[in-house]
Length: 333
Image 1: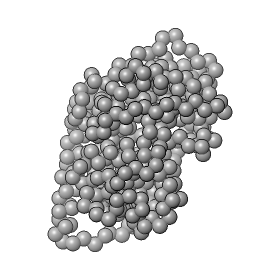
Image 2: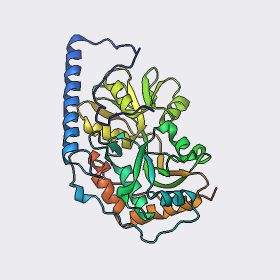
Image 3: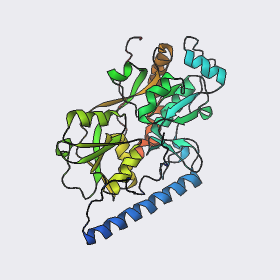
Image 4: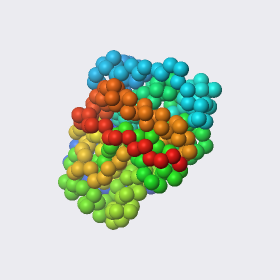
């Protein structure tokens, strides 16, 4: 699995063997200047995060760390019908799958190894409700294409990382939630004038993560687009900035973070064109764990933890907190 530094996403590079788009001399200098400035700005943010961050703190300037909730660990909690919970209790901590390169959602500080973002806070809420101190979580970066395998093989206890609930995945894993509703969107360069929505993608190179729902939708619903897949969205953004692709597509939550970190370079084109309910992936058949997490999601939404966590992480992208969606307690499998 290819690992990537979350703060390298604006350091453009050309994919091996990819064609170089011809550039007008004057415009080329402007674009190079913009990309250098963006890379320097993002490097500054990385240094700020490394100097000032702590576990759970936002990766860039924003609310102070004490604005994140302190999650109350459930005392005496027992879940004997869950083999996943029993294994974690025997081990002494939870192992949670996450993303490491998604701004404001799931990021890993390359200097400290600390994970932060809205999904990371959701994972910590769940840990507290299951009777484990959030600071003891062992986070493990899992690429989109490997999520089901990681849950099936017992590499992780649960997964929180922009994981869309759908019927196909329910045949392989279980889902608690949803805890958030996103929508597929398009990220383009700020100078892009031809792409306003998916209807404009014919003949355009559109990048997304391998194994992701957005990639599948582009291939199925917009076959005239040229779909390009990489392990991570940050690599897609690299290729967007270096003019190797014309757009990046994934959930608007992910794209909002990239655009917020480089507003002079990137923008979201048009409106979302799908609904993506985010769930917490668990091993299929562990209904005791799934239902316990459903309870935990509702409890943290009710007590205000959910909104506080959103405001201190994903809310930094400039989008106010929406109303959390109702939990879907689908029948035991």
